[in-house]
Image (tube, rainbow, N blue to C red; front, side):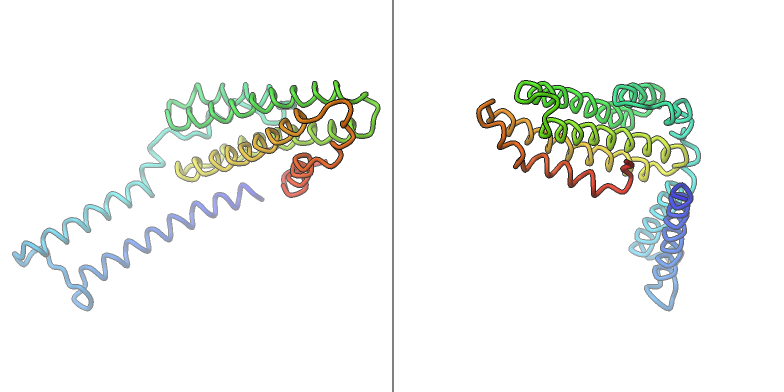
Length: 234
């Protein structure tokens, strides 16, 4: 269902752009409107008319032809089966493997950046877990609550990467592909920020006042994030 919507959006974008080009050319060259005539010897008309024609050709080419002539990203994503991705290290490895094959610097940089975010989360998660182990026994309710939340955030990121890979298989428009990757990077940035806040709160605690952790704003934000993402599955 979602893949079908992506295809329809891409098709709708092309239709809107093509209709806009037709309307603009009618307005510019029709005697009923501006009435630019490039054959009447008027230098101004020739310059304006030529500029409009060139811009029309460039936009039409980019929207309707260039995307089909370029290497699609889709085949590179076919080398990875998202069903085989069970944990974050596999996500990062998959993104790096795909990035190495694209031959497109923009995509490669974005995918490597996303893989880097995953590795940063793993590092922060380990720090949080280690600190929790120092403050609580692993049978305490607070420890279990926080550990469960952090594990759930990890599941959120894993599912987000799997969804991205699934989307990229059918995307042909470069700008739309960039948007999908950018959205995922933005989501991971938000998670990393909340993890930093949690680490700050943990650093301010000691074993003596560890009970105050149950009032943590950062963990509430992470729990809210989990509840708000429609692609998260229990």
